[in-house]
Length: 560
Image 1 (cartoon, rainbow, N blue to C red):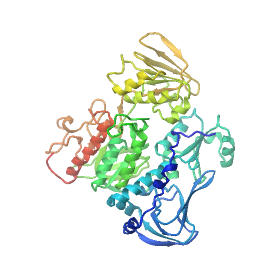
Image 2: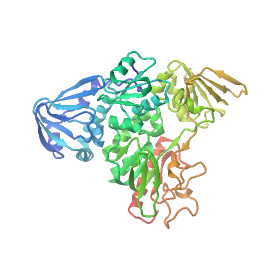
Image 3: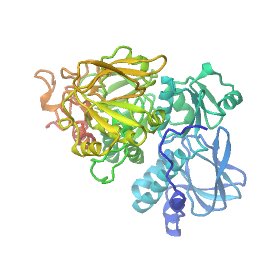
Image 4: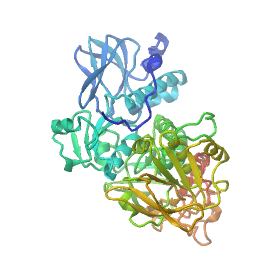
């Protein structure tokens, strides 16, 4: 029996009419303006699963069959005829197709290439709603297809295995996890694909390719989610970081005609993307998960033509002089060029000063609380360290999966650092206990975390507790190391902008824009910016506001 590192699949059986809608005659005529009519012989393939930069096909006559390949076999998604269109959200971005499409009979279809598909969904409001809804639901269906994903083989005591599983889940790639120590049938799968224990973590792709101890870039290339057309490209704006602030910049920039690239080392959504539920974001009265919010922002950015590239780590920036393009150096040795930059790399949770902390990361110490981590500690006691909203959201989420949640904070309470609605939620859940004036002083265990030593509730006494799972949500440290001396930073290494810029650091006669850094043409938004409000809504607002100022800089407008 394998594990699936995401929530139970939603029932989409009553939405098949939206997943596979049929265009009417008027819609067919309008769609035809964006493509060319082609004839496909019976038995020929329109495209294969895993192919990149595939066209969207609208079936005029004949019948197609859609199939999906997985490591252990192929299954059919049905046959379809006149009025159906192919594709999903990956079609907008040239990513790997999630299915194979074959002509069952002779087929006449309208073929619409990648760029024309984006033009169609921007230009035609009625068709855009129908097509985008189908694309999104097809991607959701793919993510939740228990037969479609890659196979991950590893152990729960391996930090590398956790990184692989987190990367796939955060990037909406379906996967089935087989643990070498606990799952029946794992040995048979390993023998079938020639995998040994020393190869773990190992991944078997849908086509049967075996990756042994892959890097995240190797994994992304194999499943078809990496960007393949970045090298040497020049953009109006490069956004570094794909959290809420970065994605907002991408959506507004691309929708206003700028050529935009977004680079992120891990996955869309940033720190917020790991939140189990955000309940105080405007417009979502029942709340929304960070991953769902990130997925919508990603699709929206790609709809308008932004290139969102993952996993791409920016190593450094050649800042150049006034009026010169910026050179952005990536971890694969390649470069892209930009007329302007938006820094949206956010902040990471601060690591407490605990001996041998790194030894237990991914082996009982975690910096996110998703369904995957919840599986590790089912019906056990856990500790959540931190008093902010992220810690509160994690505690509330984990409470429905574990035996008991202990929240540990050094302060006298939560009122100064956590939203009131979360405090009320925590107070109402019987298996959550808040421990004030408390902290962990030592982690212990062989191979993985087995217990902690801590001071609890203001007592100077150090006691041992058999806690095997600790979730850390402490403060924030900005991701600014890659900037070197390119822009001015405050004493905590957050980026200074606008009126915060020190005297003498601004080189031009005009004043800097409010979100502009000490280097003209480089902007900073969201959690990475000094003095920013650490909330998703504030990050989105800054991301969109920066584009308005950036437009003026690119146009050479002199006033601020």
